Length: 125
Image (cartoon, rainbow, N blue to C red):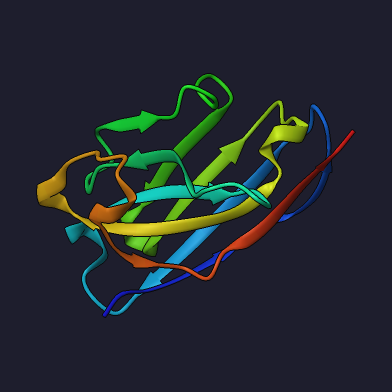
């Protein structure tokens, strides 16, 4: 009963930056941790980042540490993913997802209850 809608995807050059947003509605937003996942063509879904319900804890995949930053604004029911120093390997459909706070900052996709429809990020060489 949580609806998630991603936005902000697009085409960027390698080395550039992009900010994704995920707007939530339905249930109380601050009851959930929020994660970002991505899936490139021909590859499996991959964990990117997660932030706890209050925003005090974050976790990142090794491949994006130091380049991506996840944040949330509970007053706006929105979670963000700031992506910097983008490279070709970052090209994927990016999904936001909601997880019960009891799971903490989990990277396991199976723990997430709700998913958005995804937004395409394409990085050109």
